[in-house]
Image 1 (cartoon, rainbow, N blue to C red):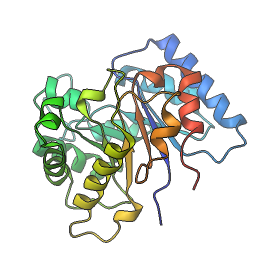
Image 2 (cartoon, rainbow, N blue to C red; image 1 turned 180 degrees about the vertical axis):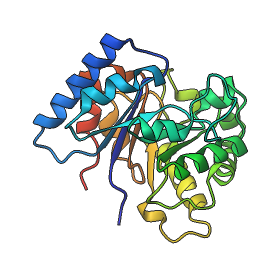
Image 3 (cartoon, rainbow, N blue to C red; image 1 turned 30 degrees about the horizontal axis):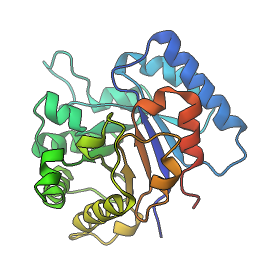
Length: 252
């Protein structure tokens, strides 16, 4: 078997009430009208825009996701949002361990693992992000770095049915640069092989590629063996470009 294709849009710290409503409504209308076999689709807006996006995508195949969660269910954690609240707001997915969180907030693999565990406990599917920096790749350490991140960030109860992994080379995020198809294939194989240690369902695990994915290169990247979809940044803020990526998703 192979994982069901999945395209997730990470809006990062972008959008207003009006722009979020318009973008989500546009995509929802395209999804309702489509005659294609669509992949799973999720939109991950900033937390203050979740309610607006929920309303705009109602009745469409698009699901709601969040960009981060705290490891605790509640408590004195000013500025943080719990996985349980995100689930209560209608989220089905939550991104954890994005390289921008790891870099800007010093999140370690153990922190990412705790957040992924919280997501699972709340009934959410964590999208666990891993990826090497340019310096690590140039030093020949890309596979070792990603292998360690996967092993250190995965909850013990992870299965192909309840987690998604996104491979995002840090040097490709927002830069317009992408790895070669052979590099993407090799790194996705590293992710799958690492996940497979002690697990029998690795063929069913959804592994997404992220890093300067756009409509013009989506078909090439999504055709690579072992790539089950994409975690899309900047291009997810443009309905036309994001829809091109959705249309390029593997058909399974």
